[in-house]
Image (tube, rainbow, N blue to C red; front, side):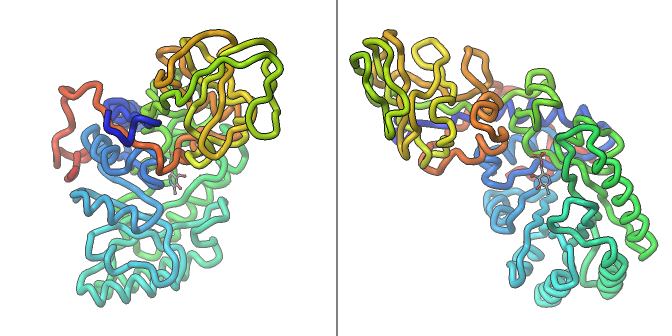
Length: 398
Ligand SMILES: Cc1ncc(COP(=O)(O)O)c(C=O)c1O
């Protein structure tokens, strides 16, 4: 283990990412798959996870920020790559020069990207985003005819190619929610308007992981999957990762920084919200809210230490928390596992979400920069999808 990982580490199994991508591709047989790698691959490491996803059949990669897309290009990825969160003055020209598909939701963005295309001397790849009901980015239906017509004009002028028309669900993780059908209807209308404007997008897409898993009619040409490729269920209602055939890729673990005996009646951590019931052994786990451990895990976060699943005793502090071993023994340096695939009785990120009143997306994504990422491959000999081998090509994994 390298020295920076002796305190704590997030160990990421790239074979799990590949297996999840394959499982998700199988669930959407008529569509291509985009691996969503924003926020450093939901905390898992965007570059290695992107390579693993490409190797398993992801023909697209996706990020929120342009900088995140540039980092993938800098690491050698040459396949189809999209990014969607833009602000005025953003680095459009670099995106055009790096062959990145950019999302456009409004006329100001269309103007900026066509200016960038002129400056770069090559057409931009643009994906028009319709707001079908989420109410974040995306063009409102009232403005959509004008945006699609302007995009078609720019296309005719050779400044851009409209490669996609896309949208995003608000409640796909709540199967049966009435907004889902309403958004699908609105999306079909947006596609028809774009078609009437003369646009012939290569890919139409609206599905995230929960829609991929529960809504085949939402698959269209491409599914954008984030949480699923990391082996996590989007919501308990949809099933556990295991039930969905997904394997959690990240194990978050630390080495105990201290183990000591303490008497009954000893207050633990700030505020003394926990008091030892008997003479006991206290283990100190060197991870805290600065590392992304929610303070809401105080008194509730599950941890595997000394062979048993236990609960955080008292408050989570900035750098550390305590576990009461209730008389069991351990040694400084022994492993404490906060979450992992669950094979050895350790909790999962989904368990942490339930224990701390959040979603598993947040649990893995907030694992902080002080925690070393270690990428492992539990199946290094596995065959991978060869580059440029058809629609599910491994397209230029760098
Ligand atoms: C626009 C967009 N598409 C797709 C995704 C992937 O969603 P999920 O992680 O549920 O697959 C996200 C993530 O929030 C997103 O913002």
